[in-house]
Length: 498
Image (cartoon, rainbow, N blue to C red; front, top):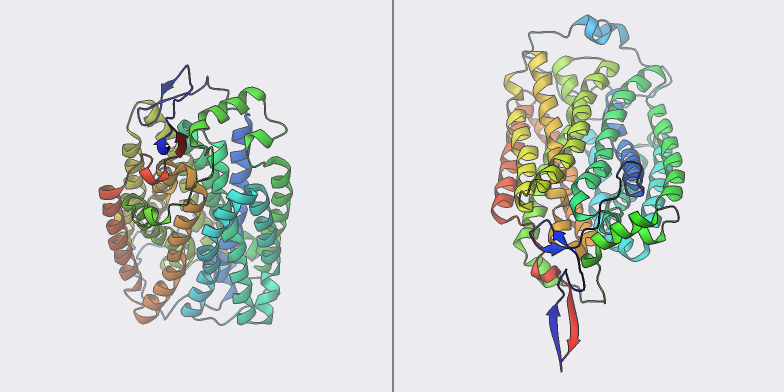
């Protein structure tokens, strides 16, 4: 006679320490973090995310140079305080001229919105399949090929724009397919490399590469566009992507057991810490239970709402800076990059903060919700105040920087919460949740383009109020239904005979 019983995480263990949820799990003596293989893996993944996001966002800053104007209509700017000349290197009109060899196109705000969103369709479609595929064939192959594909397509963007809008949109869609594969495929890595009590830190290091990519391409994109022409932004970052692909295949392996250069103590440390999360035999995929899981849906919905805010920052910060300050592209890049520099630091510190609170015996669900509140509510409140402080460039820049800078706290909250509630299916589910969240990247530029075209005077105010309402709704749903314990449908079952 056979029956199904749950495996105990402590079965067969002689020594144990208290785990994240208070259960007894074996955690071997910690091996050094500095220069460890798992942290090198996190840094290389950080660089890969840097490249993928730089490829995705390069057009956001170059759009200011690619079009005749980013303004929907002759705009009403209520600013009574100008930018100081010495802050940005001289009056705006000194550096207005761009290289003559850089072509300029006549695209409306709606067309610009379509270009912003075109790369996001692939991200929505392929993140879940990429997560599933990476769980089968390995992250090393899936993400490596994705980085190479995104790099080659980025190199082709200026040529595609030269041959017409339709070809440019097609190239952006294909670029999004490659980037979606890269984003979705990487989560399988942390199923096998991240010990539970280091998960926030390692994932934080990895994911903040996206923010550094935004910061770098926004800062350097303006400088490169003014000095060499906007096509060189795509040439330079496309070339860096090819270098990253080479580094990826040298340094990344799918699990500690297959890595040829990892030390034996570190390999045993990681494998022992993750032993209770590795399935001992094949099990059926609990699709119905997943669809009925309120904790899972609360993560997906809150992630979608937060991505609405994040994508507004990523896509429209240069355009908003241009609207408020009327500055040239070089100064626009400097101002637009500042919020993402703060966000990069916060993203790394947020992971450290989460692991610190866990070490102080905070409940895991409490840590996840604190991080989500900090990354969701505070930025939403600050952004809704922006239209009312536009008369002061100092206050506007401060509010914009803080609202964007605090958003990455969510990386230690909702964005890695699936690793807590369903570690065995995390690769597919994190890809699926990120894919659903990336629907925001499709909707945001379309909605923003419509609002700015229909109401030039109050368009930005309407956008910010809409984002505040959406984020508040997502946060409330997560605070009510969010969990951090392994769900029943995600626990391993073992067939035993009596």
